[in-house]
Image 1 (tube, rainbow, N blue to C red):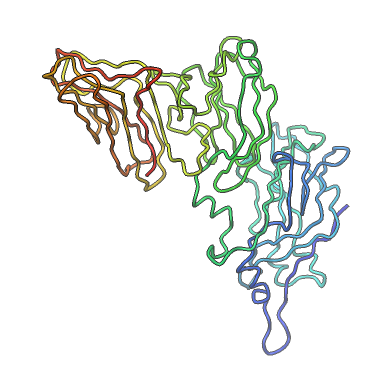
Image 2 (cartoon, one colour):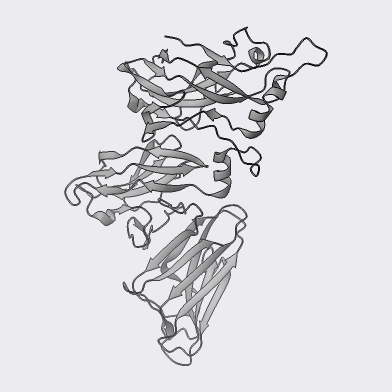
Amino acid sequence: MAATITTGVVTGGTNSHATTAAEVNGVATNFVSQGVNGAITNTSGVAPSTGSFAVNAQGTPAMFVDVSAGTAYVTATPSGQASQNLLVSMTSAYTSYAISSNASGSTKYDWIYLKVNPTNANNPASDASDVTALFTSRSSSNSTDNGTPPTYGILLAVVTVANGASSITNGNISDQRTQSYVSSSGDNGVSLQTIRSENSLDYVASGCVWTADSAGSTLNGSMTAGVVYLSGKRVAVSAVTAHGFTASKDTYVDVDNTGTLHYTEVSNNAASPALSSGYLRLAIVVTGGSSIAAAASINQGQESRVLPIASSVPYAVTDSLGNLICPRDPQRKILGYRQITTNFTHTGDTSNTQITGLSVPVIVPANRRVKVTVVTAEFFGSTATDATVISIWDGTVGSGTAIGKAQNDSNQAGAPGYCEAVVTPSASSKTYNAALATSNGTHTATFSAASTYPAFIKVELV
C-alpha cells in the first residue's frame, strides 16, 4: 500500500516581503546534513533493517519491498530558489513498493531513493505530498548507479535483482542509508563521510578475517563479518560461510562500497589483477589441486606471508601492483614491505646488484612524502680492504634513480646495516629496490638475514 510522503516547504507570501523557503530552512541547511533521522540498524549491511525509511523484504517474499515510516532531510534546490535541506516525513509504512521484473539476461541492481521534484518543491500541492517520492534507478552496477540517479535525493538501499528473479529476499537488499547529523561550527556543514574521506584512507575497521575451513582437506574458506571504510563511508560486510574456492588458483577477494564481495581468480603466482576504483582488497586465497593447504595459504597482508610468490618475491603487505592487502590502519603508515630470511651474497663485479626479494611496489597518495628504509642485522665484505655498500633505488637497480646509501668500509661481520631515504614521489605507483655492491668484484659481499632476524625494505608515509 502506498503511503503519503509530505515535505516541509514554504511558498512565497502575499505581503510586500515574502519569507522564502530558503530563509525558513536556513538552520537545517547551515547546520544539518542530509540523511535519515534517528537510529538505523541492519544485519551486517543488508536487510532486515530498522529505522527511518528502512527497506525490507516482505514477510512472504515477492517482487515487492516494504519501506518503513520515518523522517529525513534531503538537500535540494527548488526551482527558482536557493539550495536548502527539506524535511521529509512518511507517517506510515509504504508496503508493496514494486521491484520490476528482470529479463535482461544478467543481474541488475535497483537503487532506491527518496527523490525531490524541484518544480513541485517551489509550487507544492496544498498538503505538499507531491514534492518527494520513492524512486528507483535500475543500474548494471552495484557500486555505481549508471541508471538514472535523481538530481536531488538520498539513497536508501540497493536491491539485487537476478535475471528471472521471482522474489526479493532480505539478502538481496543492501542498506545504504546514512544518518542526518547536526554539524559542529568547525566543519562548515560538511558531511561526516566527507570529513572521514579527507582524514583517513580506505581501511578495515574490524573483522573480515578469512580462514580455511579444513586446511589441507577442502577448498572451502570462511570469513567473519566486519566493517570497512571506503571514501569515508562506513560499510558493513556480511560473514561468509564455506565459500568454495577453485583449485590451483590465487583468488583475490575485494569488497565494494555496498559490502559486496568480488572474487577474481588468476593462476598460482601470477601477477595481481587490477583493483577496481573504490574497492578494497581483503585477501588473497591460494589453493592447490584439492585444498587450501594451510593457514599461511590465506594472505591478508601479514609481513610473514610467502604466498603468492613471483620472481622470488612474496606478496607480503601489498600485492604485485602495490595495493595494500587488508589495510587496518586508517592513516596507512606502512605502504609496502618485503622481507628475506636468508643471506644474500654478491660476487663477480663491482656494480650495484638487486638484493633478491627486496623489491616493493607501492601506491602513494598524491603529494605525500615517503620514507624508504632498508635494514639488515649486518653487511660486510670478505676482506678488510673492501668497501660494501647498500643502496636504495627508485625503479630498477642500475638504471633507475639511487636515493639512499649506507657503506661499511671496515668490512667486519657485526656491522649493522641501515639505509634510509625520504622523498616526495612524482607518481603514485612506484617500485623501490634494495641493492648491494662491493669495491672488489672478485670478493664476496654479504647481506645477512635469517628467520629470527629478517632483513627488510619498508615504505611508509611521513
